[in-house]
Image 1 (cartoon, rainbow, N blue to C red):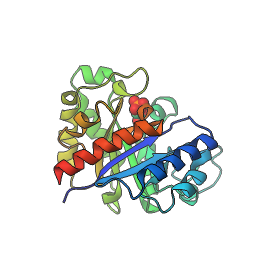
Image 2: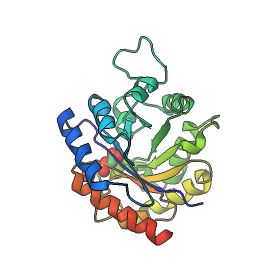
Image 3: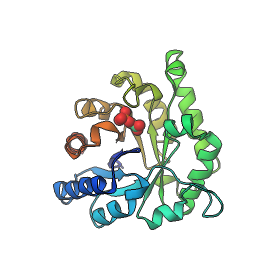
Image 4: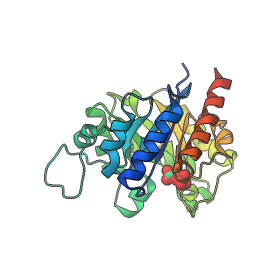
Length: 253
Ligand code: PGA
């Protein structure tokens, strides 16, 4: 069975509620019944999640949250639980993005706890894995990413088929990132597909994705979608990347 391509964006710490709602409103009207062969998703800032989810309710676009705690509630100042995210409309919970691993002490251990909570509540974890430039340069990418994925899902089986993995090389992410050539990310995708392809719902690539390179990255064997930052923060950019997904899915069918 061929999975649909998952193509989504996280706004990171950008956009007001009004800007997020305007984006969602424009996206909904542009997409209509959706993009054949593609599952679209938008992960706004938590402040805008409920309103964006309301705008997209009943549309083919899912919404998500950029992080959530593993506990259902309690004395965890500043945090947001999975049930709270679900209550605000989230169906996807992003976990372990490299910015959170680097700046907010996210570890393989906390990633695993969060994945467990998300699966327990019936949502979709989107687990981000990726190696630093240093690891990439010494040829350690495959081992590093497989270890992160293994740790994220350790001893978890129920609902695993809902989970998504995003391979996001740290050296390719954000404004200081370098756009990868498809062949540079191919070995990790080949390894992830072999190890996890039959167990999870999709394996995405993320890091400097753009309308210009989307088709090439979707063509890498094992890539089952794209997770996009900057290039999708304007609706037009996201629509162009979704169009690349539509073409790719159509050619596969
Ligand atoms: P970028 O971000 O597309 O802006 O490189 C990707 C990400 O952080 O997931």
